[in-house]
Amino acid sequence: MRLLKETDHLPAGSTAAAIGMFDGVHRGHALLVSFLRQQAAEAGLQSLVVTFTKHPQQVLHPDAPLPLILPLERRLELLEQLHLDLLLPLDFTMAMSQLDAAQFIGLLRDHYGVRLLVMGYNHRFGHGSGLSFADYVRQGAELGVRVVKAPEYLGEYAPVSSTIIRRLIAAGKVDDAMGCMGRPYRLSGRVVHGFHNGSGLGFPTANVGDMAAGVVLPHQGAYAVLATVSGQQWQGMANIGHRPTMANGDEVSIEVNLFDFDGDIYGAGIDIDFIRFLRLEFKMCGVDELRQQLSRDRSQAQSILNDYLNKQS
Image (cartoon, rainbow, N blue to C red):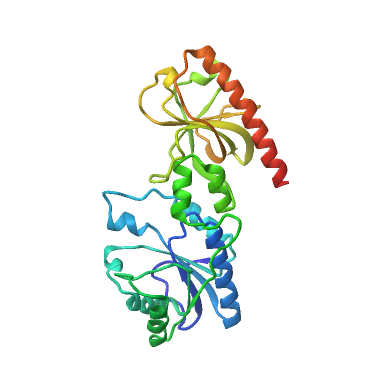
């Protein structure tokens, strides 16, 4: 696959394209890209996905930014895994937001060689975007671009959308979000120094910082997770919250206890895959009750994770 720059120009009539944010790169997106590749192969064209470096909502409504499922780097990595010929991260700007559908199709045709445009079954684009699919077909034909509609995803987890997945994650329903995406929800960061409460309880934790800004966080509480550090995966449990029992302040932290791990990983990169919600965070009577609860959490998480991994093998 070739990663394009916005300034690249492709030969006229050389590509079949799909456009969109592709936040989450979920099962519906995978179906769309598969259909795109099929259409491109039948027409003797290269398959091209055009995604945006920023969500249009972040540009149009900067005071109320939309939390994203994936940071840009991870989104491009997952799109690349869908076996495209070409991938273009396009900078969405206020000027671009003023282009109507015909102008945007013309931009794709003139700069990126688009001869065939595949639209998601309910996708709309262009300033105003009050067009029907027939309108897109007509405007495309006037510009020499054939517009076709991709099939709707009707699999086990339908309906699937980025909006639905964001809501599921924010509600703590990470297992349902995983079903919609086809993989666990992941947060990535770096292990930083925290309050060191866990070691005294017998549950040492890796405090996670340096995460991408603007991503959606799962609801506060405890989760069964798989964590990858230095290329090695560990079972564990994570807590998102304020640590009310330890009275550590109001700042939200993400801490991960890795099972059967003993080592110094401060400064290391860490990927946390959320498998299932365990419980809400709540204030306990003291450290003894907290220690007992953490033991129950670990037993429950180990059972969940073993079952999950057995199903993957």
